[in-house]
Length: 224
Image (cartoon, rainbow, N blue to C red; front, side, top):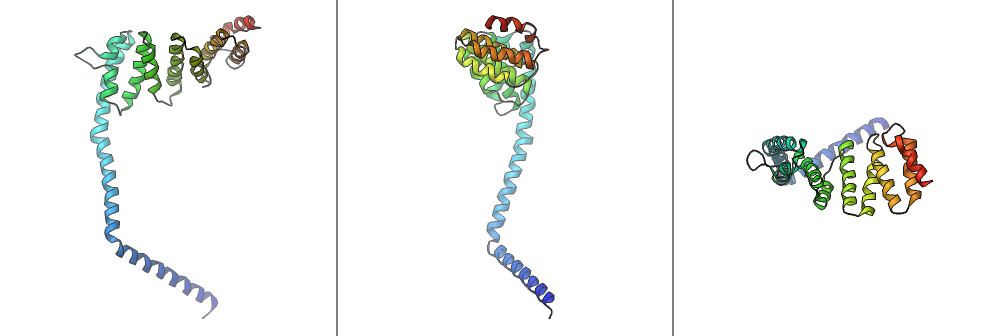
C-alpha cells in the first residue's frame, strides 16, 4: 500500500473512531440531551409567548395612554398630564407604574420629569429625568440639560455643571451651544473665568452659526 493510501486509510479510521465515540456519547447521555434541548425549546417558546401575548398588547395600551397624556402636556396642563383626569386617562405617573417594562413607560419618566420641573418640584424632576434611558441624541440631550437646570433652581450649581457639560459635549449643533453657554455662566458665578472662557471660545469656534454664538463676543469681552 502506498504512503498516500495509508494516510487516507488512517484518516478514515480516525473519522470512524470519532463517529463511534460520538454515537456512544449520545447513547449514554440521551436522556440528558433530550431534557436540555426540551428546556431550551421551552424557554424560547415562553419568551415568544410573553412578547406576543403580553408585552406587545401592553405596549399598545401604554402608547394609547401616552397619547392622551401628551395632549394635555402640549397645552401646559402639567398636573393633569402627570396624574390623569380620573376618568378618561391615567397620566404619566401611572403609566410608569402600570406599564413599567414598556418603551412608553420609559418615555413617560422623561415627560413626568419635565412636568415636575415646570411645576417647580425640582427634586422629583431630577429623580425621574435621571431614570430615562435613550440613545436618541436630541431628546436625551435635552433631558440631561434639564437635570442641570433643576440643580440650578435648587442652588446646587456644582452639580448642574456636570450635566450642562455632558449635554454640551454631545456635539449637537442646536443644543450643545445652549448648554455650553449655561455651563460658562455657572463657571463665572463660581469665580472660574478661565473655565468660562474655554467654553465660550468653544461656542465661537465650533458653533459659529448658532443662536448662542450671535452674542458670544459680549461674554468673551466680559471675561477678557
